[in-house]
Structure formats: structure tokens, C-alpha cells
Amino acid sequence: MRYIGKKFVTMLITILLVSFFVFVAFAVIPGDPALSKLGTEATYEKLEALREEMGLNEPLLKRYGTWIVGFFTGDMGTSYSYDMPVKDMILDKLPITITLTVMSFLMIVAVSIPLGIYTAKHQGKAADKTIFVLNQIVMAIPPFFSGILITLLFGLVFKLFTPGGFVSYTKSIPDFLAYMVFPCIAVALPKIAMTVKLLRTSLVDESKKDYVRTAYSKGNDKNGVFFGHMLKNAMIPVITFLGMILADIAAGSIIIEQVFNIPGLGRILLTSISNRDYPVVQAIIVWLGIFVIVINFCVDLLYKVVDPRMR
Amino acid sequence: MLLEVKDLNIEFHDHLTPETVVYDFNLSLKEGEIVGIVGESGSGKTMSALAIAGLLNRKDMKKSGEILFDGKDLLTCKRSELRSYQGNDISMIFQEPMTSLNPVKKIGAQVEESLKIHTNLTKEERYQKAISILNDVEIKDPESVYHKYPHQLSGGMRQRVMIASAMILEPKILIADEPTTALDVTIQAQIIKLLKKLNKQKKTSILFISHDLSLVRTLCHRAIVMKQGYILEEGNIEEIFEHPKEAYTKQLIEAIPALEL
Ligand SMILES: Nc1ncnc2c1ncn2[C@@H]1O[C@H](COP(=O)(O)OP(=O)(O)O)[C@@H](O)[C@H]1O
Ligand SMILES: [Mg+2]
Image 1 (tube, helix red, strand yellow):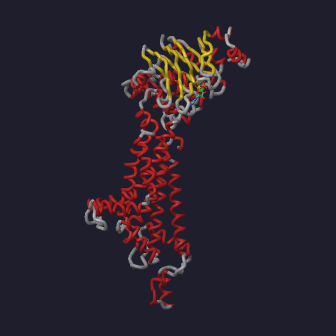
Image 2 (cartoon, chains in turn green, red):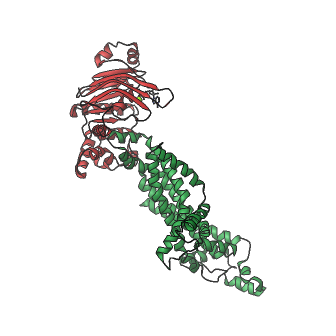
């Protein structure tokens, strides 16, 4: 319990630090937001008035304070380009990106863990060798490219979905999910290959350890040894890896949203970057940061559950 | 005869040329008897023991001869039949108590695992048996050790736990492969005493493997001397120690430090 408390406090401090560095980074980027907002209509007086109104004349630390308090109380600033609250721009896109991330992650876990166990159990046999070769190929294909292939194959040839025919979850949840399956496959494929390989290696390493011989000496069969003894040990490195993957696919969803024409967070992020719409970019980056930090926190806790030596 | 090994040969086939590591190994073990296997490291003691316990790799190995237990040949019987003996009638403990226990499973679960595999006892009954065997191996406060993990125990304690988990079903044969080699001298003596006690109380026959002749002398009734995969000589403890036939055995005996247990 004390450990959890300590980790939790560390997590909060990390979140504050990350948000601070993001804020400072955007504050020192060349370019005057007031000027870019006014554009050609800028006069000196108008500019000064707007700077004052936007709080740009305050000292940096105070501006950060106002911003971070606002951030956590639901006021994430106002978009320069659209003149609407950042919160409203992000909030209804969030479920889309979360779905993409979570669904891909579930696919990765659901496919790679059984497959990793299977290849380890049938080490050296034909199935293991076939999966090894497939893995090497799949691992090397980046999601945007497999995304294009999937669109071509399942969208245009087999007509399992309409490319570009994204349906929002506000209209129909089943249609929305059905469309999301294919981008999720594109995201999941290379990660599945990596996780299978890692779990297989990890299981094979475990199989050489002394406690495995002890387990057999008690009359366990192969399944008893695999599931009763080796799997939990072998999962320790895999849990770390899955944590990194979860953070990675959240950040990586930006590209796949472009390939599949999905209006998620990635879409706004890209347009906001090209518009220099800093409040929006800043908010999204901080949210991604928070997501990564929270995932790490959860992985640390899960570690304690699986490995008593870490307690 | 409880166990009879006849002309056991063990070959490795994981290289281009096969390599024989145990030649014509013969052994008989009576009920309640403690037989020692001695010999320098690499002489084939562990391989012979693993073969008897049914723990040698199936791949890349060739075994010939007979290992008769209960009239069954363990080398040729069905795998499921072999498993029904393992942990039930034939148990084994190993040289490395630090790594022989599963690091992520509680002591209690590991001690009562054989009960789970071979009996239909309830959880409560298994718990009672585990506590009682932990008592038998002289672990203080077994109720708290039951809930601990291996890394929380010392090497000596872990070896006691290993003995408890091997002995919980009161097997007919306990194979102990250098069970004290990794422990310091005082703990060594305690473990030897414990094995002696269990042999008396539970009539378990013990196959005790060691490169330390003084331990074999204090514990065993009979001994087998191995060198480079061959059995050099065998006999009662007195015979071997008082009238060794082979020069090699004499050498081994002379190498025992004067300080005896
Ligand atoms: N994979 C292997 N291939 C070939 N020889 C091996 C292999 N593993 C062990 N050996 C050999 O088997 C012999 C017997 O080993 P072992 O039974 O462990 O000896 P001991 O327990 O008496 O020290 C040793 O010479 C060792 O080098
Ligand atoms: Mg050995």
C-alpha cells in the first residue's frame, strides 16, 4: 500500500513536469500567437490589447499556473484557428482514438499470447518455423503500409468495408466498430509479431531453468509445467513490453488515422500543427503524455502482482 | 528389490558424433536403504540420477538398459505411467536450492503441488499436510513460511522446503543430487541429519549423490564409486572405506580432510 502511494505521488509529479516542459516549449517557440491570430489586420494597439487579453504579457510561471489549473478543471484554452474551446474540439474525438488504441491492444494481447505459447510449446517443429518466418515479415511492415494493403484487399477486393466510409460512434456504434476493425489490424500486426517473438524467447529461456526440472519431478505434464509454472515467469518481460506498446500505439494512431480517413485526435493534431494552433497541439501532447505516464504506473503495479521479488 | 537398474547406458546425440556419458550402470536399492553415489564432477552421477527420476531429455538422448521399479521398466513405460510415479513414489531434490524453486509461487503451493497432482485431497487437507511436512523438515513457524516466497528464505531453508515438497507423499525413493553442496558446513550437517531422520521415520530409501565421501560415510549403508561414466566399485560402507579395492577410491578417501562430521 505504501508502495502504491509513493508510486502515485511520483506519477503526479511526473505529469506536472511533463506538462511544464511542454508548456515552456510552446512558449519559447518563435512566433507570436496574438499576431498570427490577427493576421493582416494587426495594428500595434490591437496587438497589445489582444496580448493583454490572452495573458501573454504575464510572467511564464504564472501563465503556466493559470493554464495547468484550467487544464485540470476542464478549461484547456481556446483554439486560435477555430476560436472554440480546445476541450470541445478534443472531447468528441477522444473516444475514436481511445477505441483505436484499446481495440488494437486487445487484438495484440488476444492473438500474441496464445500464439507465443503455441510456438514455444512446438519449438523447432514446422508450425514454429512457419510462424517465425511470417513474424519476421510482418514485423518489418509498418502500419501505414499494411493499412494501404488492408484497404486494398479487404476494402476494394473483398469489400468487407468501405474505404473512407468512416461512421461516427454518435451515429451507429456497431458500424463504427466494424470500420475500426481494419485500422486496428494494421496497427496490431507488427506488434503481434514482436510480442509473439518475445514471449516465445522468454518461455524458451524459462524452460531451461532449474525450477522447471523440479516441476517435472513432481509428476507435472507439459501443460502443467507451462501454465502452472513457466507462463507467469515468462510474462514478466512481456508485461513491460506490452506497456510500451500501449503507449506507442496511442501515439502511432495519428498516422493510421490518416491512412483510414478517421477523424480522431491525430487528424486535429496534424491540422493544428500546420495552423500553428498551439493550444490544441499543447493539450493533445499533454494528454498523450499523461496517458503514457498512467500506463507506466499500471505496469509497475502489475509487476508487483506478478513478481513477488519486486515487492 | 525396490529399484533395479540394469546396464543403463546414456548417450548424447546432440553432436555429430554421439557421446556416451554413462556406461553399464547397475544399481539395486532395497526398502529403507541409503545408497551413495560418489565420484568426481563429470563422472555421470547426475545423469544416472536424472535417468532414474525420469527427468532426462527425450530429445537428443539415447538410453538403453532397464530401470525397474515396481516391476515396471521406467525407460520404456508410457509417459503417463512414469508421471504417476514422479513425485508420488520417486522424488528428487537438487543441488541448487536457490534456483530449484519457482520464484513466483508461494512456498505452500510448491510444497503441496504433488498432492494436487496425485491425490483428490481438499484444499484444507492439503494445507494440513503441508504444514505437517514443513514441521517434519524442522521449519520453524510453518504457517508463516507457507505464505512466503522462495527469495524470502535462506539457502538452507529452501533446501528444507525442497525436501518437504519431495517427501509430502512419502515416496518410496528419494533421489538427492548433491543436496548440500551449495550450503555451508553447519547447514550441511543439519540436512544430513534430517535425511537420516526421514529415512528412519518414513522408511524412504535414499539415493544420495555426492562428491564428498565423508558425507556418504556418515549417511549411507552402501556406496557406488563412479569415474568417467563407469562404476569402479561398489559395496558396503565399511568395505569401501576400510578395504577399498581401487586405487581411485583410495585417493578419494585420502582426500577427505581430517576434520570429520
Ligand atoms: N549436452 C551434453 N552433451 C554431451 N555431454 C554432456 C552434456 N551434458 C552433460 N554432459 C557430460 O556428461 C557427463 C556427466 O555429467 P554429470 O552426470 O552431470 O556429472 P556429475 O553429476 O557426476 O558431476 C559430463 O562429462 C558432462 O560433461
Ligand atoms: Mg552432478
